[in-house]
Length: 238
Image 1: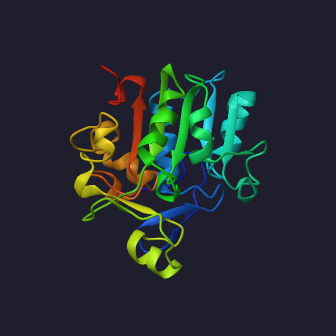
Image 2: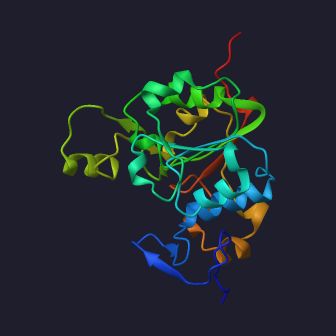
């Protein structure tokens, strides 16, 4: 049996959470998608001192390490900054109101994970403005939860917590991204691979060692991490 460890902090105690095969690191509290994000950032050399990084809803496992590495270049933000005491210097940022004012090519790296399903606004416009803020050699690295056997749906109307949970999976979600129509949704905004696969670049043994959930290894899933370069944006003028 492969010994499991956290590739973020090196911790070896991983405890189950929920019934989806996800594991939480007892030391840094990373989950599978945080460890996958860190694996991708490091393996693709996307982290280095001097970068300007905008980090939306900063994860507990990643924020302190990014602050140490990037110093003043690290800019953590969220619409409810009081929920992120582990991210010193975090400021309030409303994607619907504030994304259009982001500086063009103002950041080298923009990170967000499981954010877009919460946003009460036009997700295409928001993703466009985030990518507009990425520098010419920069990247937007994001985890968008694609739900298998579902189609895209959204509703900004008044929903009870029970109805929102039933329709979108959580009481504060306003949309669901379906794996059945990725090409017709996010795939119309960004250039995406025809098939999402982690086994070829990383191998099953490494993915298992870092407790990255097996459903994320192949095919679109709730843990799919996208690495989007500047030229991957498809919404361009003639």
